Image (spheres, rainbow, N blue to C red):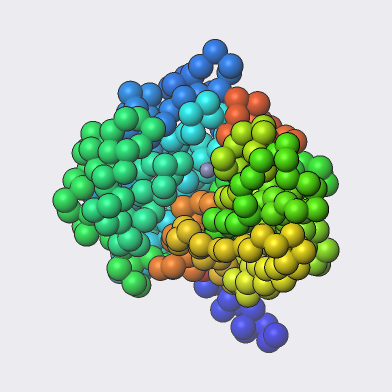
Length: 429
Ligand SMILES: [Zn+2]
């Protein structure tokens, strides 16, 4: 590189070099821990966790706290019609698309203090760091706290225009329908079109979240670079046998649906385990009819769930289970039938460039990282449909989540926020 070009480049970077170089900026663990603690008071239960389901009194109070926190760091706060809390910081080039980041603060019943919360508090921490270091980004920034993540990704679904009347009439954990809940938090279920973000409005979306497996904690790794959110397919599997007297029917003349089910469940596990990769397959529910001790089971209905990052892989796992199932069913004269349940959850890969930026940000900060899928659903899976999306995972001790035992250390939370800051600045370049 010529000396002239170096001079030109350094002139170009001058406005940034006046402020602290992003490499030297680290999130403040004590401040984040204190904000998490303050947030944990809303809906606190005797087990040390929270009951803060969306639209509850606790949720409403926590939402007010988050709005105050956003204002304190200089964000201008608004609610969209889906009730998403959005704090905006203008950029130096207002016509540029928005870099959005955030997560959610609602919990499952009997939830913990980190799932979602770390992402919202971490996003606010990033804005605080920009303020403290006098950094103005080119792009406008928006911090988002999504409505009702745990009860169906309501806020992000609204942003991508995927909420219909049927969804609005679903009764949420609060006892209110989702439509009533949106109204209760200050949104307008009749004008959800106004919450939709149009193509080109967003530059990127990034979500910081605790990892809900135990990979990071077990392997002592600081940061997970999420490759995508796994797709899910569900089936009801019906096994037809013949109900008959359990006392008078000899063992060699039985069409026992539950016996087939037992071998089938083992086969599901065997297939998923024998293929290389991160796929998972589960039988989580089983119903045998007529369900009496003295009757040979005539029919069994069980659930089959398969998850993977790759839709083709999910199909391949299913096909193999199907072959195995047919073999077992034939051996017992008990046919198997599949009814697929529409859960509409295709795999949502994150943006490849986002992954690289997150990995580089972690590396520059001297943090260890690994690429990994997310086995749990997140608002990021919706956002990935309308904008380049990235996800940053931080360890959750023993991988525990959706439980009062959920715990992420202040250092790990701060590491995540530091990576988020660098990622935002890199995207802003
Ligand atoms: Zn979450």
